[in-house]
Image (cartoon, rainbow over all chains, first blue to last red):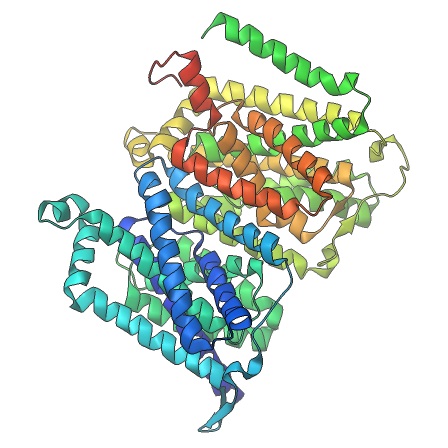
Length: 285
Length: 321
């Protein structure tokens, strides 16, 4: 029973991991650039949710979209101001650019909001549901279900719409896409916008049941890396499956091996995966 | 660029090196020692990260390894901390082979992602390792039992010691730069596939570079605890330890002989003075500036200050390296 309970909790959290990891995988697939600040985007979204609640007294129905819009704009700005210029330059510049962004966001938050942990009240989305003997808290159910729907939605938009086809065209071949009349810049900016907006929604949802601090971003960045690596770089369905799996692995290892080891298991999994199968478990060689 | 700037450069460098010995202000002497120490680890990072183009965010693992080896040798065996430095260097060799070698299959972004995870993993493991002091960390000797404990009230002896190590590292780098290995590494840094297709044995030379780089970073960790007398998981293995090496190299010019030193000479005094002015509470602010500086460098001047220098010295001549 406890095993099923842990799996259920893991799946709900894993759906949220899947959502923000899909954003990372979308950016990677479009332009072969890793966003080292991805977890810090999640952190920014968590603070947006926190301050929207404490200062504007609005609930998740307002602050989740608000965080999505804020992060969408941040992503587009980062693309035009930074990534667009470094992505064709030397590798050192490509790698350190978003890493610098991560430092900047993390320590600006530390400076502005202090290192103290803050959190939204538990009662914001209160209640515990009893489903077939499993106790599922309403906040996690809301977060997991929303994340699942949005991740699937992102996959449908990318594969079933005209816009998705254009983005795919740019990711396959920038020059060829330009030749058939698709301007690459807006598509890549859009990928950054959507990728960042996914962290916006995910961050605001996690804030419902997770503490907020300037330094949470580092572990989210690594979680996104391992999810994307497990699911195959550039694949949204892969990220979804991998995110759910990581959620369950974390939940089980935290219970059976002790809370301090849940990161050890995930990080070690990531390193071994990179060593033996750099293209990802479900990825193509 | 040949004669005049070089004479000028040597003169300026000479004055900078000698200045702390002439000053009797302990604050500046301390800054000089910390600058030399930071220059050691940044120059060590530069071997693999700058010349070889393998951007590591995990060099803190080597630094922590050296620091912990020294203080474990002191707390468990009772020997002077500096006696643990060879152990740290030995451990760094083992780490380079066991962890570094498989990571060399990864290119570009993938390599950097792996190094972040390795450092994060090391930090969690050490935090949960009671033998090594857990989250609290380890302390060095409180009182000098003999001269070998290297406990001095003044920062000057440390400065002299660090200068010797830095000098050896830079001399080694200079020799490497002029020799076969320097050419191989630069070929690797400017394009891994191209280098491989020209017959550069890339994995072997990456490993050589990592062995030297890791050994000196580990030595820097040992020297750090000899002077500071304390280490905990965050100050040994934390991501910011790696950040310092990366930002100093990138500012001065990654893949150049003196780039990391120039970066350290600019950034360490700046950080220490801001901390002194803001009363220590400004340490977060320093990293906001570092983050912004890294973004600006990546965006406008990926070659660092060295890029400007060669433009100035070459009077606009292109391709001067």
